[in-house]
Image 1: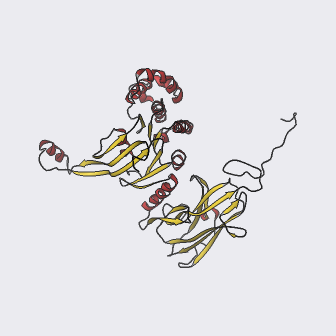
Image 2: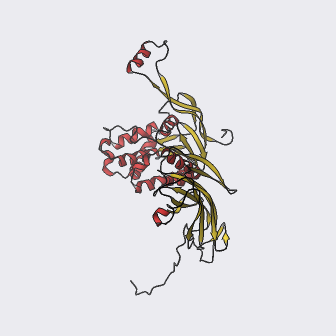
Image 3: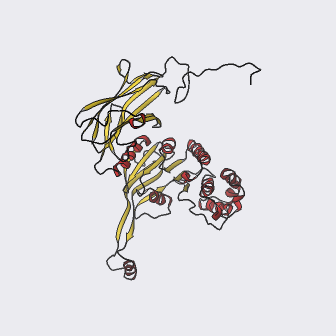
Length: 420
């Protein structure tokens, strides 16, 4: 993305980070003593060649397996680590929540650490004094505010760190996994504050392995793998590819490609090919269909074929809404479907999923289908097809309702005044 198209908050140009690796501890000493001699180290690149621009007000999710370089990238963005090559440009005041307790001194009290951390964020003393009551109220750690931080649990450290980082709305907020440590109640408080600040124009860079958090908070995502950006798209699309890469690690013979689906979407296709999906289609009572009414019956027909003999075969599907949120999913392992294991290689067969009533809210939905072994697709993934089918659900004769599902049979009864 060009930085000239719209105001931007973060711009990375050919960014890279490498660490020196010496053959022995004496090699490092020899290099120090003879700086003009040929180097005795080799560079171990963690990240390289990253070009990324984040417009102001955008929420960017960063996804990747452990060791992909996510934390190193955020440290360079926040200035705690110096890039080996390339440059980082930032606009506005930045607040970061990186490693748990980063910047806290264990012997200082929570109040003292909060004051120091706020100063490091660039706040003046009068701003810190005015914000301190709000920091205490949001953190909800009570008398521990005046106790040494070394007595804190990990969740209490997160509470204090997030409260300080968001005491005043920053222009850019960077969060790296730390919220996963907190309890569910505080996570909801944090996400509510992030959404509030986002509505006011704050830029967010968010690293998490929680797909629900990425989908709900971010409108763009990038996938890091082996120190490079391999995908930059909507969170739904990038998470699909991430799932494929997770399965790839468990399979030695594996491919992950982008498969065209209809005219409106692209789904990730992955698997080792020992069994293949040949066609996926949605049907109503009259035949193939793409538009269904709320409560209408749906048949999902999956045509498949074993390419070679496999001991087990499981067929699963997952229904997602337009934002990529999981609505419903199951597979033949859970519903105990017979006959799949006995299919001979090379023989095509059709499995029909029958959904008697599509009791979901109006909107666009995608259906992903998978062939795999056992109950999950991670260990033996034969063929995973994201967005294999698209359907549109429209209102039917039911009373007007809001939400993601239709609770059939809901009624209201007025009870007498003497009823308990």
